[in-house]
Length: 225
Length: 224
Image (cartoon, rainbow over all chains, first blue to last red; front, side, top):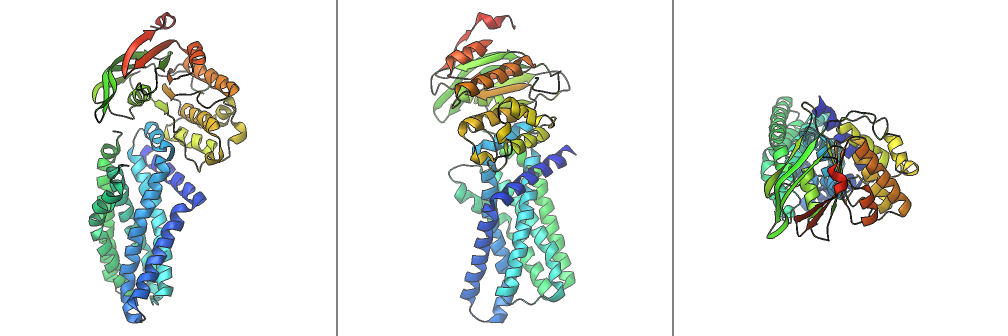
């Protein structure tokens, strides 16, 4: 219970800070929207091609936004060495991992939904009523990305090679998440509920795997040097 | 006014045994042997780059020693809480002092109802709801100390508590540190402020080149 309560307190702290400064959301939304527009323009005026590209474009935009968001959330804790203060307060430091994952899941979900709305308009995607099925896909995809990203950020730490190590370590880990998100979205646009359900289960399994890995290793990898 | 709502605190003994810290090829702390216990206020002194801040981080568990170890023994069954106030302050800039303290208290399982009284004790009531980003460095140092005390620690470690403070604020901080000791905590302070810290100290430790060179004074031996 203490772990759950502390995780919620820390997630609430991150969300409150992000809502006040809006630095992370604004940066990631701008990045994601720019990516959609640029690739949309590069793909040309062929509407059928744009529609077929929409799931992959949106997922990749969220993925790169996740990197920016992770840096931002990590910066909140590293500014004034606030993480040291939190570290000493907690009896179970895994709350830092869970809290950060939860906050990032919320922020990436908001971003993912906003980018899907943008894709519906910019890429002329026609999803009809089945568009509601995007909610579990976006939520689980965000959770999977957030749980893996938070762990890798802790592993990489604040060293000089962080800018290189973060994408090199993270992106291969997220390939299955990316594939499941793209295929799930495609199944949704093709009105294939069985296909969507299958990919939702895959995303849930990936998120559970990353969270389990994070809970097992976070305190070890994030411990002070 | 007592700083804490909880009059009985676990009694602790903090021991550093052969403690060393190496950064690259530089020895920051070398073979430090040191013991301190509840009810003591120990001042760590030394020239710049003598390893004082590193030693404090080692004692807090925020750095791992290259050799030796730190042990904290306390009452059985009680979690010994350690609070550390470093130069950075450990505050979230986009939260207010009150929000920072409430968060720290809740995470530490401490009582968060006396937060405003604690801020008032350090002369911070007027800025309790301002964002930390808007506060001066001297004010932030006091907020950082209040934040540490809000966690109701058994061991309080403070790096340069008087740096950047005017005389009035420094006296107030000195009073709060003495009160923390009298409240049944072990307080260890790194300070360059000789006169004020000498008045405050039960015991003074001198570090030169990372080595413990002197432990004084007689005034503190009665504590043992």
